[in-house]
Image (tube, rainbow, N blue to C red; front, top):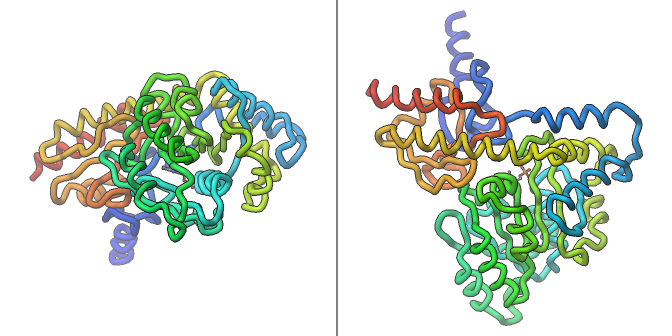
Length: 374
Ligand SMILES: *Cc1c(COP(=O)(O)O)cnc(C)c1O
């Protein structure tokens, strides 16, 4: 009995960082964690709209009033004409939209940490029938315009895949944010060399909230042709929106969605939550909160001896290097977070729409306590 109990304790205790930890249980005593903004549930505004959409019969396959309304709200948010498609996740949004930009012999330039490279199991190459993803270096998760130019000019012969698209991640994979000026500099180089611009905006809301800009300033006005506008990490249950600012590129995209398994038969359940997020600005309220909680977490952790904050905390992520033993000790105290997954040796702490001051303070207090106990 005793042995069984301690085996169970071991099994459910979260002990080590890294990919192997993904299937471990979330500690039941902690309602909220810092492992991922995807750990959070559905925010009230999205859930309310989902329930409203559930009240009556509706037309299927996206021909319904909720989907039309959600697309209209997105057009309002971006203050322009655009074509909008709702898909199940970010991998589908990114890979199908990149496929819409590329022929099989083209290449996509992106940062070496880009989700399209590191976390989509080759889906962009697969859906684009073999278009190659080419990796660019750059400090703080950002691409430098010179790196784009170098990559394009490095090879211009017929034996090399022809660069066709620049993919930018806003917010970047390490939580930094491109300013409108940085974006314009990048897209200018892209234009100069005939590249189309794709934006992986799984945390686009956090970027808008952090910069205090109008959404158009960091999308179409900054030269973005297609944006994968993130919903899940912002508080929606399931789904992302693909937003084409270049309407020509959206041609026949509905067929790609269908073929890629992304045409939801009950589309209203993907689209209605967007109406809840966008109609009264809940999307920005939630993004501001998660950003603010990350700031608070960074401030708290900067007072913990031996903890190093490794990137500017522009959004809802805090990347840290922890002193020896602290990662395991925090896991033993029930905290769940990943180490070495996005960048080697660094721990990533994500805040979400429902992160509270108490969560942040409890984490910081535990980290502090560990340094004192030593
Ligand atoms: C989470 C995330 C996505 C979306 O991933 P899915 O798991 O496919 O929904 C895309 N890009 C970035 C940068 C992300 O962090």
